[in-house]
Length: 460
Ligand SMILES: Nc1ncnc2c1ncn2[C@@H]1O[C@H](COP(=O)(O)OP(=O)(O)OP(=O)(O)O)[C@@H](O)[C@H]1O
Ligand SMILES: [Mg+2]
Image (cartoon, rainbow, N blue to C red; front, side, top):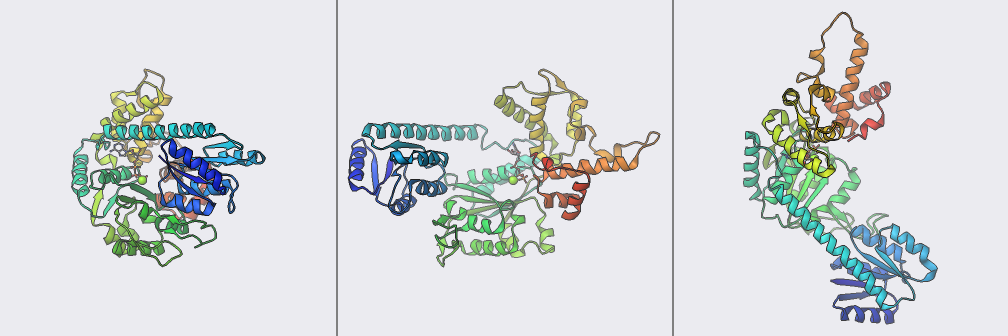
């Protein structure tokens, strides 16, 4: 285990480092916060022990910077009696432990043992997660339909290459899962898989996320920051929702893909990257190109190997196995018995269009497990109304018996579809508007009129 010690008192540094070395740890030392930070950045330390008062920074400032580089960093602060309060705020900021002055070496040892336990637990956890991922399989892609079998074959073949892949498919079809499977099926499987959602991050931040920055390149840039491209070195980067990236950033991305070089913000430096690119979108990029929202040249760079995931309604054969899978996952997680459906209920489930695809099916199974009484077999009338309304969905099944209030009926349908579109778009109004063929402003007006609240937005 490698430990970094920061203290401006050379005697204490000496004392602590010889004690820790005697105990079998590898130790590096620094006398200022600045030196400590640059050591931390270049080395792999399991633990940082720092004096609270340093000539340049205080312990809280150092800790914040370290934690922003590595949120899992374990930090122990040594503080004088006067600064207990600051020690407490340090703990709140994510510092692992603090030791009060004057301290004896035994206290240090105890604190380090605690930290070692945490490290061991984390390793254990990671192993467990790997086991789960493996037992769910290279095959945590559930489904035996023809479409799924073809998809899995394609993933194996594409995985073996270095080619850039563009994964397309409606929302919730499993694009991220497929991207992970490609990475795992590749010679880079032991390298990192770094996902980034290009649709969820504002433009200026996205550039910083992707390419990083040098210290001082803007006001908040107090340290260098490595971008996701460099984090993915030796592995794969997953550029999710690439269709929502701004044109300016698309141009920059294109250059990175052509030259395989990134330049962090605020410098001229060009750093080569060895990264496989997997991109995904639920937009129809050909259409986006026509509308001038997506660069054609970037499209061809990304679309070296296209992988399209068909929507769930085109592979309904997979539904029973998926229900089984989610049944096992959720009943196991929540300690409820698995949910069962009557054969007529299953018919509705097969005929429903599943606009939110597998994610919607997953949420549906979870909700049914929680809401239905134990042992009850789900009947059609227990199904959510949109599924119960049948495959044709709402309107065709309305039969005029006597008279209706048409206005009220239409309002009801409008609300129904708007809420659904918002839910499917994860609350992104512009995306929901696109689904409905409305302008964003029109959608917002309608939401106001119908008093569709933000709660709906945050449901997902
Ligand atoms: N074949 C599958 N087998 C098991 N689970 C799946 C499968 N496909 C998708 N899922 C699950 O469905 C959910 C949605 O998948 P994922 O996030 O990969 O979809 P997506 O296409 O990226 O969606 P979006 O466009 O909304 O981001 C996830 O919880 C995922 O685990
Ligand atoms: Mg996704």
